[in-house]
Length: 341
Ligand code: TXA
Ligand code: MG
Image (cartoon, rainbow, N blue to C red; front, side, top):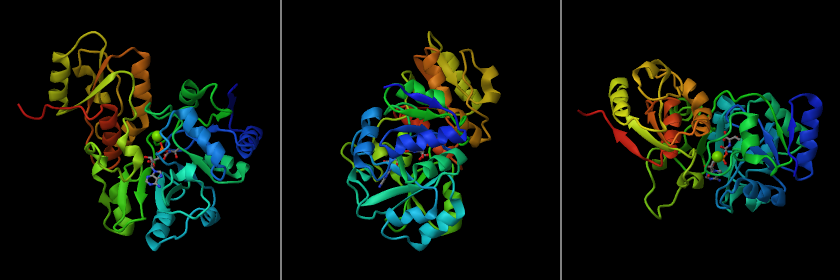
C-alpha cells in the first residue's frame, strides 16, 4: 500500500475524511501525540489498527469526538463529575472513561463495558473528525512498544506502507499522551498521567485516586485497570536506565560508566557536566519542556546508535508525573538511585 503524506489544507483534510469514511486508516495530528485513526463505528476498520501497530487486541482504544452531541452514541451515562471535567478541560488532553453504550464495537473497547473518550483541541484533528463525519477511534500512531510519534515523519517511519495516509499538522505541543481518568468507578481514578495534572483534576472534582500502575510495575498476573499499562512501552532499541539524584550525583554516575555508545539524556542546563554525548530533553524546572521533547529524544537516540542511555530522573510533580511515568516504562522499570552517598 502506498501511504499518502497529506498536508493540513482544506482539500487534503477532505481527502483524509473520505479515506476514513471508506474504512481506511489515517495518521492524524493531535495536541498530545499523533493518532492512528479509523471510523469508531466500523469494527473491521478498527481491527486494522491493531494489525498495523502490532497491538495486542486486549488493549482498548480512545474514541475522539469533535462535538459534544457525539457522546450520545458512545456512552450510556454522563455523570456530573464527567460533565464538570469536560467543561473544564475539553477540548484538550484529557481522556474520560465512562460506561459505554451498546453498539460501540468490541474492537474499540476490547470487549470492556466502558469506553474511553477524548475531545482533542488540535484544530486539524477536529477538522478531520468533522470531515469523516463520525467519531474516530485512535491509539498513538507508533508501532506497538515504540515511543509515541510527535511528528508526521515519526508516523511515516513506523507506518509507511501499512496505512492509507498521514496528515502532517506539524509537531505536537504537549508531546506525551492524554491524561486518562476513569469515572466508571467511584472515587475517580487516574489511570495515566498526562498534560492535565492530578492537581488540576482535583481542583474540579475533588479527590482522585492514582492507580498504582502509574508509578509501579505490576506484579506478575496482577490485573491492570488500564490494559495499556501492563505492556512494555515507549522504548527505543537502546537500553534506557533511569538515574535518580542531583545533577552532580547523576553526572558523577554517568561519567563513571562511560563507554562505547553510552549516551546521557539529561536536562539542558546540565549538559556541560557530562563526559559522554548528550541528548538534552528540556529544563529541569519546566516539565512541559521535558514532555514536549521526550519521545523525539528517544527516537533520536536510536538514530544515533545509542546502546545504553542514562536518563536523568524528572521531578514527579505536575506534568513531571507524566514524564516520569513514560521514562520509567521506556527503562523497563530499571532505576538507579544515586541520592545516597
Ligand atoms: O493523547 C492520547 O491519548 C493519544 C492521542 C492519539 O489521542 N492516544 C493514545 O492512545 O495515547 P493509546 O491507545 O496509545 O492509549 C490509550 C490508553 C491505553 O493505556 C488503554 O489501555 C487505555 O487508554 N484505555 C482505553 N480504553 C480504556 C477503557 N475502556 N478502560 C481502561 N483503559 C482504557
Ligand atoms: Mg500508545
